[in-house]
Image (cartoon, rainbow, N blue to C red; front, side, top):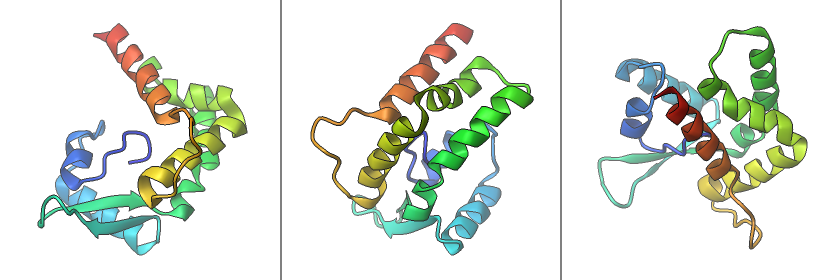
Length: 136
């Protein structure tokens, strides 16, 4: 949700690198909603769908997630395609984290970004896709 901008259950399920089962995903989304990290709202384009959004407390976890990514790259086996986003967030530091949080606030909370602000998500996605292309 944070890095792939997947907002519907089907997108989260289909885009899962772990191959998560639908019942496990449903349970995790329910728990994240109960804990106030994710919100659910009706999808205006389809009455049976909901849109999942990150809440402000979840968005404020970006620096923590970036630091966990840095730790993981140093201490756990990984692959270039799985570690590239963590590497970019590490290199970008707090300034990039803040830009990313501003972008997430726009996408998930509807808070407009300053004009001319670049997309951190696009940079992370492009780097990830470039690494995937090397593997293919």
